[in-house]
Amino acid sequence: MIMILIGPPGSGKGTQAQRLEQRLGAVHLSTGNLLRDEIAAKSSLGKTAETFMNSGQLVPDQIAVEVVAEHMKRGEPDTDYILDGFPRTTNQAEELDRILEERGLEVGTVVEIHTNDEVLMERLTGRFACANCGEGYHKSFKRPKSDGVCDKCGGVEFEVRSDDREETIRDRLGVYHSETAPILPYYAKKGLLVRVDGEKAMGDVTKEIETILIDGR
Ligand code: ADP
Ligand code: ZN
Image 1 (cartoon, rainbow, N blue to C red):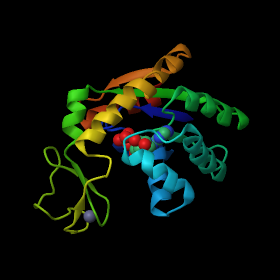
Image 2 (cartoon, rainbow, N blue to C red):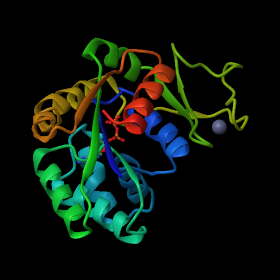
Image 3 (cartoon, rainbow, N blue to C red):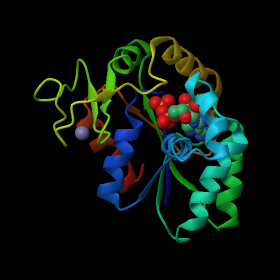
Image 4 (cartoon, rainbow, N blue to C red):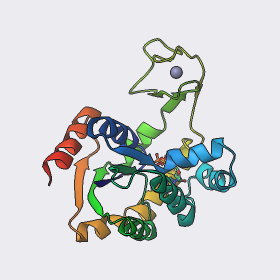
């Protein structure tokens, strides 16, 4: 099945997708992660993507569609996917339908993780990660057990994602409202959209999404 998680930056969709991947045996496909991999690999696609990402803008649709199509081409045709961060524009949603149609597939369920902007600002301005293993932390919600030392690997260096600065965060939220939220009606019309409350505790949100995916709507 093809599941889509849609939510603003900071709604927890990446974390939820990771958890669901383990529990449902589906493949978590995050365009943000794939693009960051391209940047790390210094590919030409990565170089183009980097300027957009660092300023909080979306990368051009063509680039996002290409990384998803490439990734799906490499997988088995019957793979279940959890899409995180894609589609992010109406054009991408239409392109996704085309990619899936070629493989005889269609979107199964779309979950919107709804969260208010003030809550998102608070969450996003405190995020940081271990520079060594990538484990994610937050200055108010999830500090390392021992200050300055990564719980997972013992690393002592931390980094803030380059697009997690306050001005950039505002831009990313603006982009979500203007570009991404308009695709919600696209899926609602098809009867595929379900909304969950992203302000609840992470574990409760996971349970709610699992119930939706396993028991149907
Ligand atoms: P978040 O949802 O917290 O913003 P992501 O890792 O999903 O984090 O995305 C980070 C950035 O990657 C976005 O701000 C955007 O620049 C780029 N990006 C990710 N997915 C897409 C996409 N489908 N279309 C265009 N740009 C994308
Ligand atoms: Zn670490």
